[in-house]
Image (cartoon, rainbow over all chains, first blue to last red; front, side):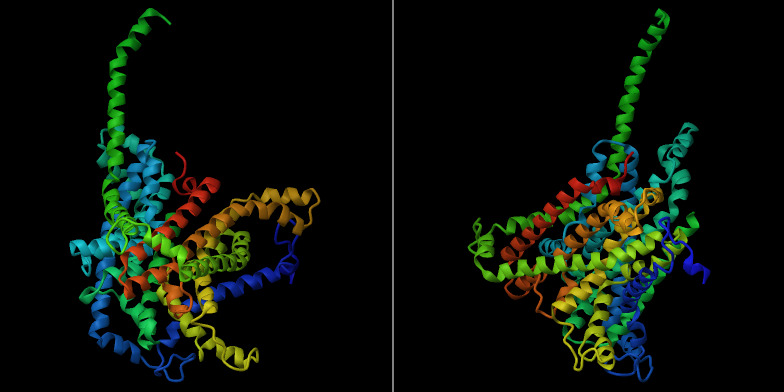
Length: 271
Length: 302
């Protein structure tokens, strides 16, 4: 047990002295992770009731999900809205982040702060506000209306990711390109873009997830044949515990975990 | 300076002027790249929220009045909603500090690579749909759920305890969802603490515990305060988790807003509550920005 008595810090604490911290942190991390993933085994139960561990394993609830037109329709809507939000929020956020960062104008900071307000305004307010405004212009229950609202939620995330990427990037490279005759646009696409592309991909994935997981605006603004997965799930949760939700949750966990691991992988490749 | 050089500079002046004009024009071009994003926010946030602001000042007779705000002061039910919201937000924040500080400290003392791995325990839940996590807690905490089963078989309590559809369930779920918002900034500020500080403290005769409380803890405070404020503000407007895990017993501002809209279709009253929520949020964030320079952290310096 050499490791045990080795100093763990600069103040002569040994790993043994610090055992309590390691144990505590392990418990906290388990408490963080287990409730996130517990629904996965439960979704494979044969029973009407959610039990752990399931007494009989089956894919019954996945069949229910896959054969339900309502859930299928909602899944397609959520994927559609997610992809469209990603395609809109990524260029919008990247343009704004680049313009504001490079300009160095004294108004840039104020504009930046204004553009990230959707992260600060309580979402419930944006939800009922758009619900009211959309009611006047007939955008409720439309894909476009929902995509627009989700874009505003996702764009600030894109801006923060891209701004931090630009901060770690040497803009002089663009100046060199321009002194050699490239236009600003060409310098951006040929020199800057390839070097911040991983951050752009990360930002895009985050904006997809933001939309895919969004509940409150979807509850108000989406509906009818364009209701999202989260809207139906929320309605089901308020009424009773339906094991189909466990199956759908498992799929959603799979989607977000894959995307998160992808961004982590991209992040480590970048270095 | 020789006369010839002076005349050269003078000849450069018109050139410099046009350069300056060109530079300014370019600055504006760059700024204008943010126009689409600005437009989207005006359409989705400014106009709708402004509209709600206006609606909150319209009485039931369709005239301008303070009726909706007066009701908030008169009726006890509103006071209870505000109190619950404040209580839940404060307790969730405290729970997050209690659980999040040791976790962030643990992550901050690990070598960078290991910390990156264990950080997944924070990031995976963070990026999992909060609806899914709320559902998981509903399943875990229900009457015949895992937690009750475990506690009964371990002899901690004999009959199923009501853990959900009340304040307990709400706080557990909220703390789980909010924890990353505290841990991430706190971890960031802890990583910035120079190791030499602890060396110095120990050199000067501080015991490890003294060094922690006198040197490390004060330096980690800025991250902790920033994280706590984010958690508190997010809690104030939270909807999904209290609605599901509170089971109608924990009525917070957001829950009340939807209830007013669903049951009475009273836009004035709902908007007024929303305005109060927004103003509370802005005040807290304004104070936070003044004390913590949040914008500098997000936007950075040129």
